[in-house]
Length: 194
Image (tube, rainbow, N blue to C red; front, side):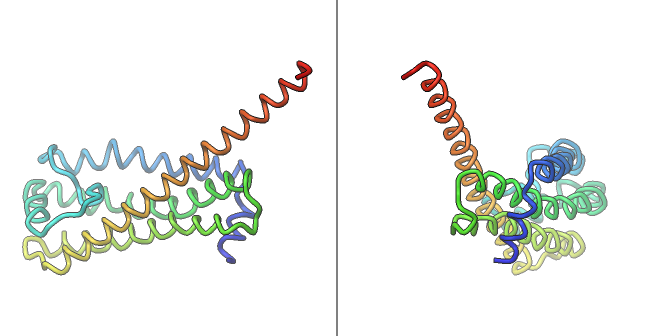
């Protein structure tokens, strides 16, 4: 509960705007710069980070072979350093954003605030995934089956937690918008005498 109270306390519009903006800068950089750089030699393949259904040992070997030495080096020196900052921003910015939205419609004691743990857990699994991807890159081409399976599990878990979180986030945004529309309609009706 301490984490929830801390997030509720710090979920101000200003904090949300600053941290969400920082988060988006890293997300866009990763999506449109570092991932395409790593995949230059294999543009039709997906990096481990963006494979929500996981991957097999065979796929891992195929990907690391296809991106070649330069791609593997860029994965380690460009993509993963950025992806070590991004989950930290994710862990901070998204719970604050959700707390800020939830405060508009729910009492601070509501159990709905337990949803704030979803992006935190997703971010932690992203870190686990990153460490395991580093190990895969370091041990390639002798990839251990258990290492790949554990990395794949971390990727799937991160993806599931993120998907559930983003669904709740969209529902929270819709709830805030709906309440605002209802208030505006009620205000308009009062002014017009209905």
